Image 1 (cartoon, rainbow, N blue to C red):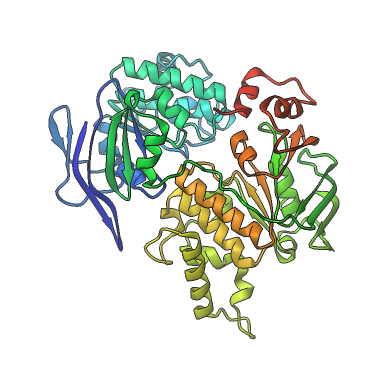
Image 2 (cartoon, helix red, strand yellow):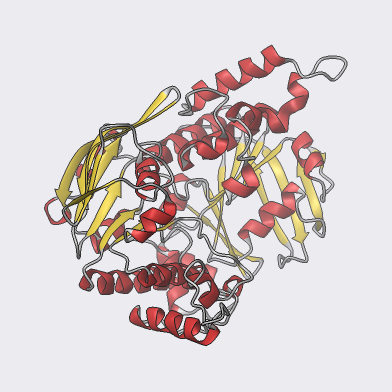
Length: 506
């Protein structure tokens, strides 16, 4: 498949500028670029969800094509596996795979047995054995992803597009995906793979195209380049020091937690966070890190414990009380818990701090609201054509900045950042780290939850390690070697080998 001269303009912004690339059979082609570089727009064009501007040329098997709709794209042999999987939870794996491809008998009845067998054969082709009658909501994320890939094979897929396929996968599941990619390459499928994880770029990829500001700025065989060169092309600046240094004096405790316990599985958790300090909550998946964040923020009504915030007791169980006291939570799932995707950037930024923009009679003061949005958008370098742009149309990195802007608007003193850089590119990560340092310089305290040990070591002043809902130890940055971290992260259990590998990313 080849694309030549692809342009796409939205009101006030040029999303794609003369993009050209080729996808070859039996090749994994990596598509790299910062959030907002145009990758998602290209995927939407190829998926038939967005029509390009006039003048673009798309060709498959030597013939010029014009993709009319998502169904037409699928009929052409183009399949897209999105980061947020498109499955119906209460339907079985087979029903999801055959949705829109149902087999019917002479009298129109569904041929359930034949459909189940087709689903089994497609999954078997991928080396996957699972119960196709099982509702997909009972499957792991990795299994759900394989169900979608299996459905693509039913359509005689010629081009497979994978958008951030490993963002929610454990290491052993990533390895399985790599095996599946090898099988698909052997079948002659052309694979377009979007990721921000450079270890996957070089492990899985054959060739890479790099986007910046809607344009192709480079293309190269991956055997002939390295990580530093790719990053330089992506961001157009030096990010050799991804974790910025800081010289902030650490002050008095802002948040003190004693005996935090909840029905969600955390037991007797105690720690403190000081002004100017990043405290990392680290541990394997399922260790209770996010549960601690939700308990402190009032989202968990069953939470009990003694909490002091800015010198005053905080009664748990109310989000409103937590926000009023100066606590902020940037959740792990920014799309569904951090934003209202159908509202504008401006409305999202001011949503949690409406009291700051109200007059004596409770009315919203439009000029004050607009001024606050403009100031925060500039401060965080939010890329949007205006404050009226819908939050759901922004890139992942810019959505994360909007969530941060929302809490900056409240005047929060303690920020809980749950996986703050998940799914965003290296340039946007550095911007988030710089913002964290700015907050610390203004006297804030930060609790950072991260699954990436390099990020923990690069940003944290102290590290609280959790295992099975309890604190298993505390480490300084200097003490936090991979071996010591894993010793504490598995202190109360016998981990499977794959979980251990996941905790120490390359």
